[in-house]
Image (cartoon, helix red, strand yellow):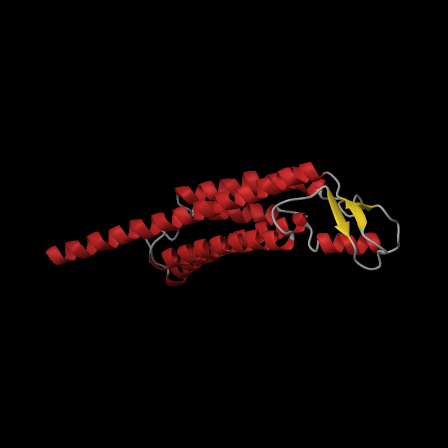
Length: 219
């Protein structure tokens, strides 16, 4: 899978982000995307082939794997990376809309099309709320699908066509557990960064609005 489009998106978003937003981009790019491409993808690459059960009954191994891993961890992680990065497109599109509007009217309509104010501020806040919501949704989804943030060494399966309770073994459970914890930790860090940036922007522009209103009253 090529991740060039996501890298381009993150670099574009970085131009219009606050300081906290740039930290979020760095975390997503360095601690999530690069770790996924460089290491995690290879660990889960042959997870189905390396899943072994103590019986060779035709179909038993497949249904047991499907039961315990309804969606691959690594594919769900990839989907999460794409989904939490997508709301940032709203900001990029809004800035592009401002720039095109200036070209259409052939005059300077904004001091800086990429400056976070007015309508762009609302778009930026919406993107932060969406990113935070998606991070939480995926964490809950991970927890529900796999009955917690854990990867057992041994699972017992009694689903047909298995003739009885079968012991099935997951390959490299310790290594997978390490990357799963890393995934959860970076997701939580991104949630904290998004909430911090959201609070910062609301506080900053609330103070700015209050001071402007106070100055008008004095005049």
